Each structure stands twice: as C-alpha cells, then as structure tokens.
Image (cartoon, rainbow, N blue to C red; front, side, top):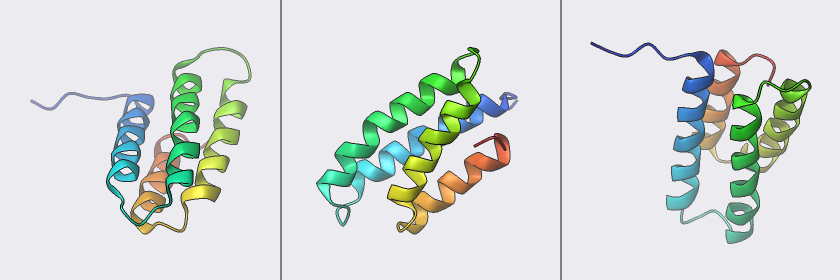
Length: 89
C-alpha cells in the first residue's frame, strides 16, 4: 500500500529530484549548479522549520531558485509542482 505523504514531504521529494536533475544536466553552466545547491538546502531547512517567518523565507528561496532555473523546462516543471503542494511558495 502506498504511503500517504504530507505536502511538505512531497515538496522535499521534489527538491531531491531537482537536485538530481541539476547534477546530471550537462548543458547547465557549473556556476548555476554551484549557486543553486546551497539554496535548495536552505529551502529544505525552512520547509521543515516551524519557526515564525519560515514561510516567507521559503518563498524567497523559492523565488531565487525559480529565477535561476526557469529556463530549464524539466526543472521549471518540478518547481511549479512545488507550488501545488505549498501555495505560499
């Protein structure tokens, strides 16, 4: 039987897929790869955080990632899917 996941867990899985796609994309400049990995880690941290303001911080990290990765269709699709589960992004 399939395990029910929370919306946050689904977004964390999408982040892992984004991370993998970035790693295997030969056309992506190394600079973008290096700049986005720490931001993905920070986004993961604030999604699981229950501190005040974490949603606003997650939204900022998401916006940074989206602006860097939107030109790559596969990554843009995964980033857009995150907003389905966490509309505050």
